[in-house]
Length: 182
Length: 223
Image 1 (cartoon, rainbow over the protein chains, first blue to last red):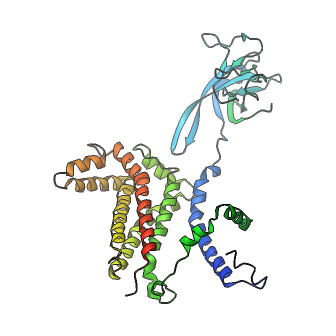
Image 2 (image 1 turned 90 degrees about the vertical axis):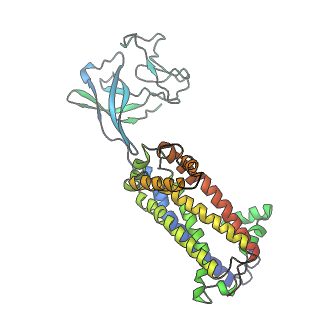
Image 3 (image 1 turned 180 degrees about the vertical axis):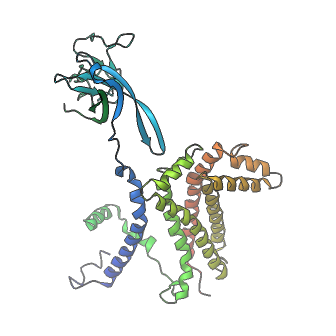
């Protein structure tokens, strides 16, 4: 290929170039025909939107306190490929300074372990044993305040993620999970 | 850009002679459809290979969604067919391609037979071709079970019983094929493994031999 190139200068195509282009074009067309259905098939997950629904936690807004978080355990309908099931999901509910319900995911923002709240043996919230840190992660010692704010000296580098909250008929409804800024 | 990248690699590894050696070969006049249209029969082997390549590709993609398990197999196939983007097309490629491979392979075999191309010194390539034929049949037999629907199940039940009729060894062959006494969970995983790992390895090896031999010996002369 290289030895033939440039012999004719810029005057038109050499026979060899023409044949190369024709063969290359035909080959590319055939490859594209095969790839056309395969690529959309593989990227199908990108075309699916997840969530968007709100789920009832069964907890009344009035029951959410502003001193300590309260654990809500509720079912979320999940479609995982051909498997549809109701999975148990947990969230910690607290009222923030403005009196709005803050619903925190118990998933540690470091590597995804489940953080534990400071509760007594019967599951009722109690003051933390180490000052302001109320949530503790069992994996790498990450810890968070009652509002899910992380201790920057520990591995997790952002606060606990929060669910979108909607109050309907006095009940707390939770939607998609959102990340908070550091 | 492409040319520069190629040149950069070529300068270091001198790859041009490798692919030149592979790509440059004479196509005799009697097999060139441009000279005589009826020479298209010499394309059947290449077409078989082209379809095999699309089978491998579509199969790789199907494996992204398929599960070889008696609980999930049917539902995952249903998911591919009804829900995945163009899933019906990709499954269709694999489904129709399977029949097409066998048809093209058979036409290729008829061409080789009627032009006498199997004769000395090319007997060994005919033998390898027949082995490829058996491997492709194996693909058909094992792949047919994978959707795990009624047709798949009973076709395999019949196939297993045909294997059982072999004198003396029959019952052992059937047990090995089915992976036990019951046509079920073990059969499905077994057929899946054979279909996607063992047979492709065998097929690629045999095809390699087939192509090396035809390149070394050249295409048989005109009638």
